Image (cartoon, rainbow, N blue to C red):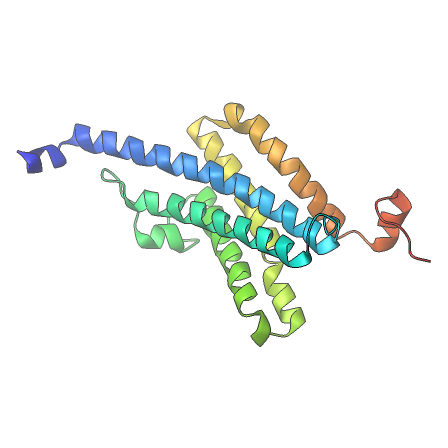
Length: 199
């Protein structure tokens, strides 16, 4: 009887609905942590928050947010493998550009893998030259852009875009603004008053 219940399509559909709710929740949390990670990392690298605490504590905070981002994204990925009616394969959730794959999935995979490379580069920093490490770590920026695209297309496909738009924009605007400021020339920042010009 228990085996019969496990194979029941109605039970499987209910299971998949719960798994999809888990996937949606972890996706939202990963998006929020991703925006906070980028914001905090850019503020730390520019030295704008150094007065609050030591630089090592700021870096640790950035690494904690990045770890949470990867953890929530990892649970989001694994949740698709747990579906019963139409389970995803490992290849479908880890290999981008596979045959018949939707573009939003490819964006999500590339985003996760780019963030993972950036995180691994931090652990390998002492064995890499500074510029090679910096190049690897800056993969987080295109990974962020791909993650935002994946989140918007995914919310649109689920019909949640109108509900989540305000929260998504609230987190996205500061992250993109600070990332943009991060790459502006120091002279331009001094002209706008965002940076004091050193005589």
